[in-house]
Length: 173
Image (cartoon, rainbow, N blue to C red; front, side, top):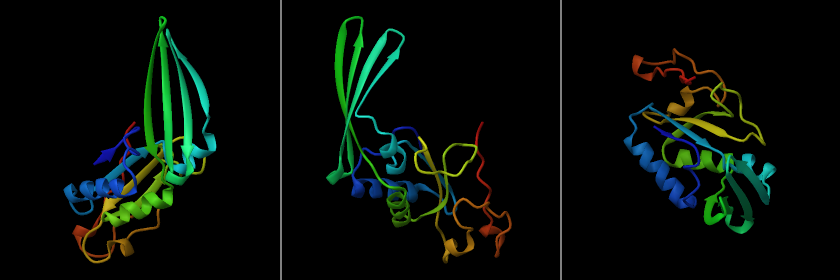
């Protein structure tokens, strides 16, 4: 399963946990879940502009951001101007730290396998524009104890039966 682009952040903490639980419920044991987001706190907060103008062909738009610390929420207002016509739209995203996301995934029965900044995969660090999380659905007795620490290569031959083998993540082009 996967959640890509700006799909994360529309729910508050309990709603996000519920989303991860719903994902976990449809996954088979040891199946993977990839989460790609640009609104992890470590990504967005170091680079957040209050105002930013962007020009794309004949479209000009203004992005105005306000981060509400008490709610860990980013409120954005988008003003689009094309051929003299102006439209205004608003959006909000809840912003979670990587640690919060990890706890939410674990609460949903998903085990963190890696944090990356691209599909290369390169390790994620503060300020990277995207966070890619790779997790698997937990199963059986303490699967976590058989897994290497996050961001370390996945062993092809884990102790135990054939059923305990995990494929290495396959990253697309």
